[in-house]
Length: 465
Image (cartoon, rainbow, N blue to C red; front, side, top):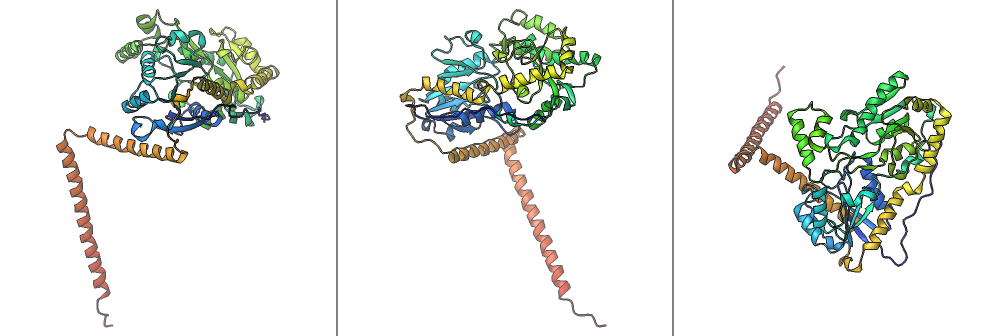
């Protein structure tokens, strides 16, 4: 087993002369969700110098919360800002009228761009935390469409600190040579997104010639989550990878609608046909390419990365932190040579661990520090709360209340969906009540008979024998 090394953690401390703010984080996640969401939410709470109160619920929760008890509200990317199913109309109005600081995290920014921009402007957002690289930020979010909004670029994920303390199998003790999991992303995300699954298809064909043991899949049923994913990655000598992102920014949603309508008519249509019909001139016009959180996981678990060549948000260097694989796979021989040369592979693995996984700049603490600095720059005294904040227990109770209400509303919707008119509802309720009364009556008769039988048995005269 390889020894674990821990970096010196950064500490969340108060800044001199700055008050600690009470901030509400609106989010939506459940146990079993992608660990990146939970890590992101909990990282904000753990490392911010401000007090982050988590409200884990979606929908129209305006009636549950008094927003003026907070200095600011943060909308997490787990809530789609432009959808009423995530942020109900009443909550949307309450946020719009809220006088405190307002910030939003956004990811998957290749879709619903115009609707999301309009929603953020309607909410009166002061800070947008985006994963869009600075060089194309104006192309995706033009300043005139979000006037006065501070736009900060973050990464899609960071190094989970708990992985750095793990003892993992050594390179030679891992049973899988190359592993990979990915889903086939929608066609309308363009040619760049297709690389996520094309890399494994092409690599598996090549790997057979070199007798490599591979465990790869792009099927949804083969995806691995939580601790299972960490175990899988720790048992692979190497893992494939690409940059995250897309080569299409679907501002209006028209591309997605056109492609999905066509696929509904003809599921066997090729990517090339769909591209030529619906987004030929737009594919590659704006390329959103960023490092994937999986790269940080691999570096932390000392798994060799075999990646398509790319920028990786400036965090990885080819041949220093990963083995570059050309997109036409023409250097497969060179890649296999490294994979079979334990010493050479170990050098790259060790550098990635030291310079990427242990780099404080790639930690959640660093991300939260950037978030805090943006909040401190934007916050003004006029945004301060005029009431005392909720306690953790009070917010938790409100969350439970909201979930109970949601379950009741969902049950009511299911009942109503099966009814044709209000008379049907009355008939069903009356019928169920009648059935229940009949059951109780039958049970009462049965109990009386059983009681009578028992009494008669014990009151019989003794036999004369």
